[in-house]
Length: 237
Image 1 (tube, rainbow, N blue to C red):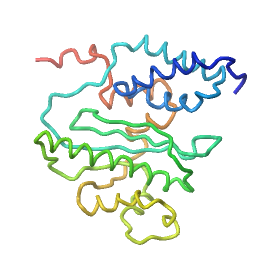
Image 2: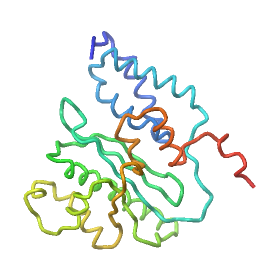
Image 3: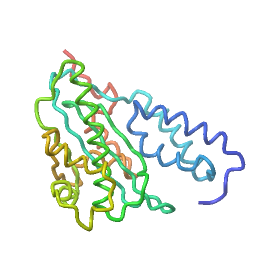
């Protein structure tokens, strides 16, 4: 990675401020969670990436999350992981996003707290996080006087994890996973969620788990409604 920064205070400040921006700028979530791992002992290479974030912010100051005025209140979610992404700890990165109708209303990019022994296990842990978030969103909508009309589809690109979630029998592949992860099965049984397979090319949560090319990054953000108001001209009545 090169040489350690002699004084990491400026780096911590540079990374800390964009961390707050991730609450309204999902396009920063992946890179900020990655840089946040090196707050104690950052290298010059990490500082270079942090400065690149500032250049990105300057060039995308008018970009934001577009919230549709559509009355559609159906929920959907996409979940993805980068298995064993960290070369030091081999922990995976969880990424998910939640849509309310056509509007992007929730997202997360975070390293998992434990090492997963397989790709399916890491994805299973990630799904448990998005299901927990969906439970909260459904309750919030109910408090606002809105009832989610249908089962919430959760899309992932791993067939094995869908099989594990639907299989009530504990076996060698899942017996070591924490009990709290298995509440996915409870929510499946209650009819709150339904797991669906999605092609990797259609996985919207990909932007929260992988470094992408500029074109791929921009394309996914457009699908999530993250764009400049200038792109919406002609949409107003």
